[in-house]
Amino acid sequence: MEEIFLEAELRKEKGSAKARELRNSGYLPSVVYSHGKDALSIKFPKSALLRLGHQHHLESVIINLKIKDDKKEKGRPCLVKEIQYDPVSEDIIHLDFNEISLTEAIKVNVSIEIKGESIGVKQEGGSLEHILWEVEVECLPTNIPKNIEVDVSALKMGEAIHVKDIVFPAGVKPLNDPAAIVLHVAAPMKEEAPVESVEGEVKAEPEVIKEKKETPVEGAAAEETKGKDKDKK
Image 1 (cartoon, rainbow, N blue to C red):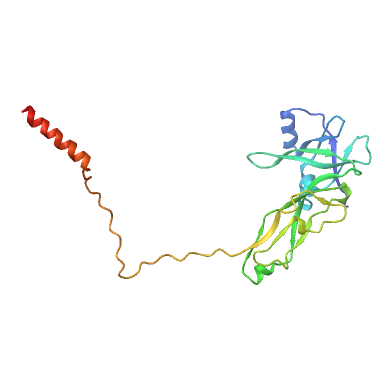
Image 2: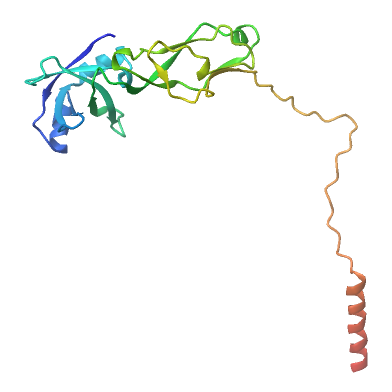
């Protein structure tokens, strides 16, 4: 497993105003959570995190935090718990870390990477649809794979690859539904030809609303009313 380091400092500044000042000065406020211990407030250069983000999938790698003046000189192995973004600019404004033990199994999401070109796409004109982009696995932190590679070369039109079809590395246990579809090759969409009118075909005339005819009961009632009117006269 590749070791990833991020140098940080303990953060004494508290409150939203102080956090805003930190961000304006190029730092990101963050919190490290440890099981059974008090949370630790830290800060680090935003540029250092962005550099890591370009090289790794931050949510599925172990980041060894090297905190200045920390009692743990070897660093703290952590996983990113949550990344908070500004709702307007979408810039990262805060991070939460979970400190982990390298000897205890954890659950983590790992991205799916496609290998090869499907027969169903290349020779049969279908389209490859990617349904599941990540799979949840359980393993030791030291066994977290960078990604899960899936070879689609033999996939034909109408066929699919399910979670149960993927060969996972030793020590990595998938947690998704085994029957869940990861990828499948769909048939191309057929365009419906416009309906042309046949020469000589008579178009249906619009329906004419006719006057309502009296029913026998209604007619009899009307005649009876007329008779009574004559008697009165």
